[in-house]
Length: 118
Image 1 (cartoon, rainbow, N blue to C red):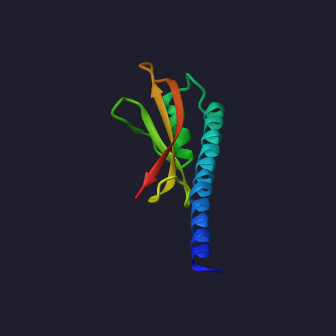
Image 2: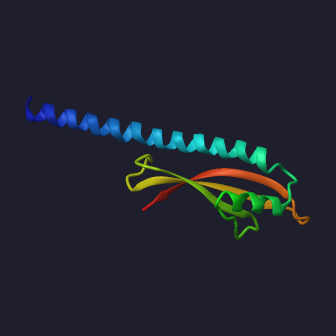
Image 3: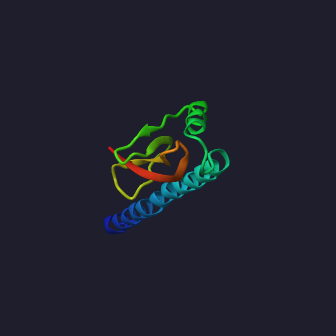
């Protein structure tokens, strides 16, 4: 195998790595988002009390913190490994965001994934 053939093979291998690995990491993070959406539907339905939300969080070893826009947010899971479309980003955080109405009940909920970069 000549130098040019080896260089072409190496370039093809690098291209495959940068195309396929990011999709795997993001796919896994998306699957975990779906899991947490289902979990929220089961455990913290709309109109649940803030107290039941915080009790559930405490039992599961995570904490909701207030955000600037008045919601509660919690980082509940990390999906790690080489799995992002960016070279120095290797971890997805799974976040729960909950809005509490003036009566102290859960008004809305959302689950999102956030790409963490170092």
